[in-house]
Amino acid sequence: MGTVLITGASRGIGLAALQALAPQYKIIAHASRESSFDGIDLSQFPDVEVIASDLSDGGESLSETVRKEYRRDLTGLVCNAGVTLDGPIGSYKKEDIQRALNINMMSVFRLNREAMKAFSKKKKASAVNITSIVGQRGNAMQSLYAMSKAGIIGLTKSLAAEASLMRGEVRFNAVSPGFIETDMTDKVPDDHKEGYKGKTYLGRFGRPDEVGSLISFLLGEKSSYINGQIVRIDGGMW
Image (tube, rainbow, N blue to C red; front, side, top):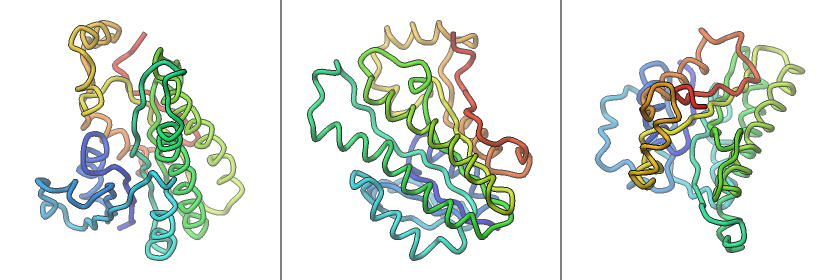
């Protein structure tokens, strides 16, 4: 049984990833606070360890913990934690910009760096980074969020190429969700929701468990020839 670190594992897509992966792996479930897991029955999973860390430091403290405590056993990574910061580009405050970039980009960079070091000692290992269709197509009033998610795409493709220089089969892929039923989309006004649903071939938002299943697939052996890919899960958005 391998060990997988999931960031932002207490809700939404992160929790769905935990639920999908826990039967197969030891899970290091991250959230900004341990209390984030209150109300979640973790006893139903065979081997889950909770770790709390505020990623607004760019993932420095969590990366250090991974390096000291988990690097030897780490065979998988799911970088899911992220925040949105919406509004006209001129409205962002300096401190809010830095916080968003630290959580959405720098923490992903640092954790992938630790994963690469851990994976270099493994015959097989896999990472899945969560980006967004906004990082691929852009969106009005989300320039900062789009930039941070686009950065994850560049990082993932570069690490897949870099991993090819090592022994073993080490893979880096990204999942690019469209509109998924999470806390983030709950904040979207109802009239806007209907408009976005109308832009998908399936006419609905996705469910977190559907994304969790895709993450599980990309981490596992059945996707062993998929590498350096950005896999969209958006209901056929046009």
